[in-house]
Amino acid sequence: MIKNIIFTAIFLTLLITSAFSEDKWYTLHQEDLNFSVDFPSEPDYYLDKVSYQEKIVYSKTWTASDTNYGGSSTIFQIFQIQFNNEDQTLSNDSSQRYNTSNFIKEFEKSDSLFKIQSSEIKYNGLLGIESIFENKINNQRLLCRTFWAKSSIINLTIAAKMDIQSISPSADKFFNSFRLKESNFSQIDTYKITFPGEKTQEQKSIKIGGKEVLFYVYNLDQQDSKNLSFFTSELPSLFKSSSFSSDDDLNNLYSYLGELSAAEIKGKVISDKDIYCKDVLGKEIKIQSSSKFLVLRYFLHNSILYTLRVTTSAENENNSEMIDFFNSFEIIEE
Image (tube, rainbow, N blue to C red; front, side, top):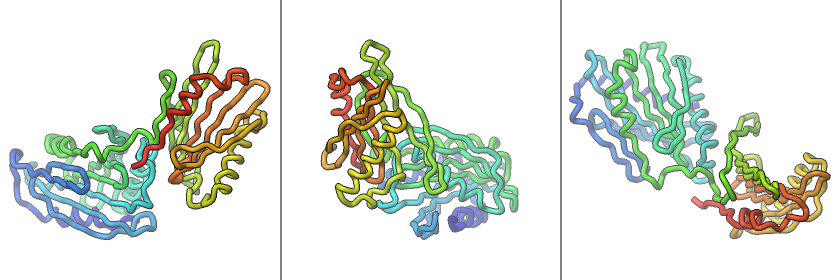
């Protein structure tokens, strides 16, 4: 559980009673973290180590107050946790939901906080969560926006002893000023591939270690004489790359996945061969059933399982659309 650095900072700054005018806001530039945000005054800064999900990580907090609203101090805060490289996960919509949701759950563990509402938001290309909490001890309302950007949790919070709507001008100014440099924006996916037409997106989920992991799959069904179907997915955390240290281990995994796919359509594996995406070893597997002919490609890289699949016919297995589709696949290295 996160150490109460978030709430301690809020309570400390409640003691500040200086008033600040609307036109003298202070812009905080954090070049190393690639973000900027406007405060009603120059914020106080706190650096600490916190326990988060059974790991010790560094946290950075910037906090300022404003008393323009009826003399009651309103707290503006940005809180950031930077994870180590080995703790980085996917930077797509799936991982943003997963990481921001976990952070909000830490808030919910506090006996003094009651969650009033929570909803998903999209801001400047980032998927996040906006939540409203009530502090039962001092009757504060907390309006929070939480984002996952590469290897960081970034949480923006406003705390006030009044209805959040009554401070909306300053709240809007604070939240809307938040900017991330382009280099810190998350990729839509951790891979690139070119579909031969407009693809559709579908969200899936899977239980891993008792936790729900969200991910996306992409499909394209061609309604023509070729009757081709294209599919891709990236699944994080199901298989750890460190568990497959040799080529033999990887090949055993790929063969196992191929057999599962064959069983799913009541078919059989008719061929397999090693393939590479740059230096990443993968496997191409062909499966034949009474009604379908599948060509699958698997790659495991940085604990992400990539699956590419084309459904076609045996007589059309070397069609140009499928070849171009597979050849366009590229893993994005951060």
